[in-house]
Length: 192
Image (cartoon, rainbow, N blue to C red; front, side):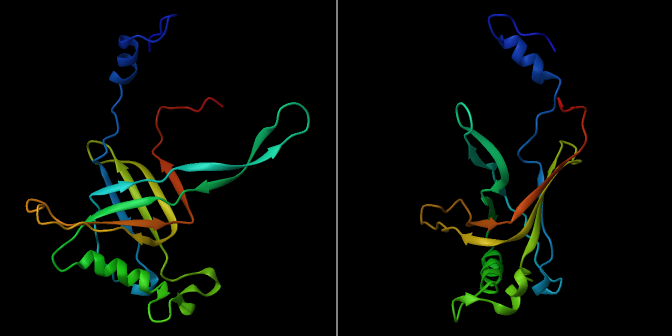
């Protein structure tokens, strides 16, 4: 890799950094919703047409002994914005499935938590969702495994008379307690 010029990085320097790399393609991914215990292993398979992966940050404590205050990292934070867009079939199979899943977390007739499903914080209607990124040939590159995942919000669905060359889609926002990120080993080495 060429060294940038003293005045700053030139266009040629910038291009040289990325010409030898295969950039990740946002269309190369798969999603797996692991079987939900409450379904006894029976569950439909839906492949979302878009996936928005959440951000991750750290929580901090403020420390101030001598000099200016500083932030000390004390924990991990997940913003819970795993959002997927699913095409809807005419029978509304996708909507029916996610409505059923949410109704088994909060009982619709009492608007209370499903005691049998939520006992001891081990909800049988939680699942793991795995998003796998792929290279151009379809090989595994990375996994995002979302733990204790369930649908939190079914976002509004748009219908309209002017949408005659389109199809209906639904977006679902999932809540996950945390996620585990794993990547295929590469030639990259950490600077530590």
